[in-house]
Image 1 (cartoon, rainbow, N blue to C red):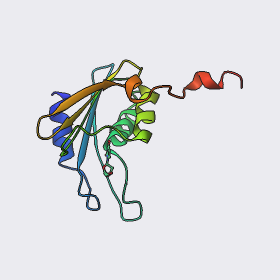
Image 2 (cartoon, rainbow, N blue to C red; image 1 turned 90 degrees about the vertical axis):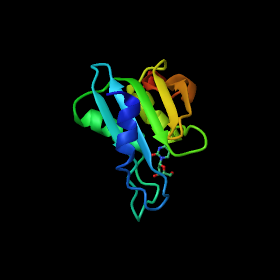
Image 3 (cartoon, rainbow, N blue to C red; image 1 turned 180 degrees about the vertical axis):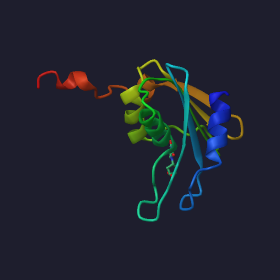
Image 4 (cartoon, rainbow, N blue to C red; image 1 turned 60 degrees about the horizontal axis):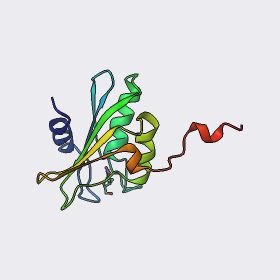
Length: 130
Ligand code: THU
């Protein structure tokens, strides 16, 4: 299974009645496992939970913590980048050189690294004086 296929498939399960915008995410860990997530909205917080956050939560719940590659797909004119919060969540479990492919259902794709998506990231070293 490719990350592209996994992300396309899980996107169909998105619960996005408020935005109408379905997103699918898939990530591969260093162990080679694929985890998927879709966005899940709710009436109180219509932005809900992002697809990337869902995939990361599934990975952590399964006992894995190291992302090797990630893929995000949505029906958009241009590839959809992860939101700010998801960039920090990806960076928690991915090194700066980990590729994140952003794709459209129409076939466009762009790949950036986690470091490019979140330059100057806050990390544990910033708390070294504590
Ligand atoms: N969304 C994601 O799931 N991932 C992204 O990278 C961008 C935005 C979702 C959140 C919300 O359900 C909808 O897209 C519109 O913001």
